[in-house]
Amino acid sequence: MNFEHLVQINDPANPMLESLSREQLWRGLWQRVENPMIFLPGLETCHFLERDELVLVRQLDFGNACIRDRVTFAEQQWLRFEIEPGPGHAGGVLTITLEEPQPETLFLRFNYSTTMALDGEDGRYAEYVKSAYRESDLETVRVIRLLLAEGSVQ
Image (cartoon, rainbow, N blue to C red; front, top):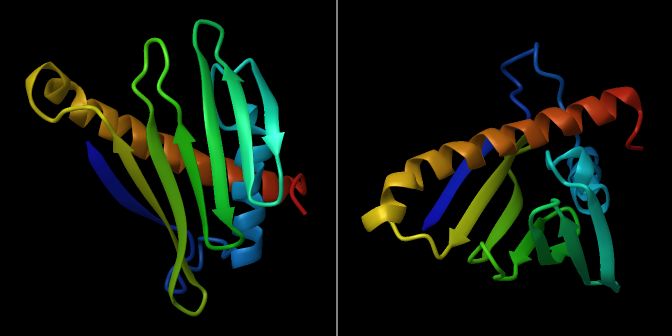
């Protein structure tokens, strides 16, 4: 299954929505890499297995499930989470891209690629999974805004 959607971050036509700079948004997204427990309900621990200037390999422990992922990025442009297949999950890729089609108009594009089939038994769950992804991504943006408002992210 391939699925992508956009989340608008800034809307110059909406004065009720506090605008974020590209740098603020990036710092907030980076918190999802460094402190994933804030963003992923049920995550008990995160261990960094490898770290260099271009790649981070993490082990995410959800209690009943242990997931290993590889995070690559281009600063202030995109993040990619490559989830390794394991017992109980087939793995997949999430790419989050910062888009700025006009000055001060920011979007995040979330692109998911999984081995879930869109037909048969998996197909019945595809819409549910897409909805869960969408809600999780909206929650990510809400948490980023909260962290910035609290001053937790500089």
